[in-house]
Image (cartoon, rainbow, N blue to C red; front, side):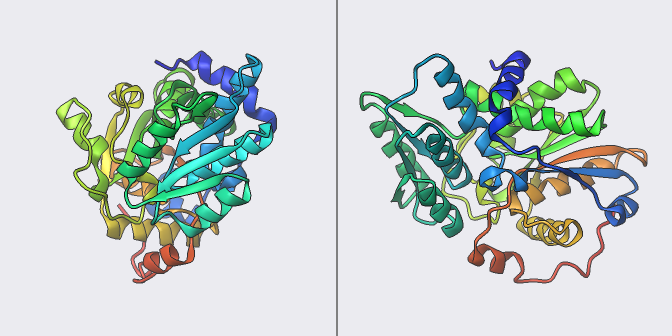
Length: 327
């Protein structure tokens, strides 16, 4: 299992290659919810998402060992694709990304801009199978999107950076796809802020993590999910992440209407271009605050900000700004 010391080492490795993203808050939202909500703006990170932390850490660790591969392959719904493509460009390593035909156009274009080859398949399962086959070629490294100790360690640097900026908090909230970000967050938080509760948020239509925790075994989705939160549309968590996710204080399954609601409100209040995947964590915040005394301090990890035009149209197909956030 990834350790806190692994995250500390990862942070040293990647510090010069990533941005220190800001902490942002809204006085209006704080007033409406009766607590202080601090947002870590990782949507402003290189490649527009936290994923670059894990990808760079994986290659930087191999560079320390003089063991860089001849080529890299990866499977991704978008943000990990960009992260791997960017990380490989830093080390001048060819990269090929396997994804689905419905991948976000913005994410696909950015992946190719960073120099990676993009192979598209009808379903995530087909893309995942194709990357497995490609990974057996000599000199090839497969960098998975979440289920790897070096990826988890790299993602854990996000909450390390955030807690250094905020100090102690009462609750920490992050989205859950494959569980890489949440796993790293849990491991780091248990050392840096052990009193804080850690919660995940997951689309109700892609609730494999919540179902896995209920049944105490990894459960895969029976079919590709339909959700605005495409960054959390993974078929299942991994064996590495699942063991850590068992330590969560809770995971909230969020409806599509609430995902759209919070994406609209956070874009409006924070003036940030946010993905639905990161915005949905606010529903988990609200569900938790309903049962807490006022004046809690909450940290929300805004995981990314890569949205294409078609997704924006879906998000804003109905106006949710007439309903003021409340408990």
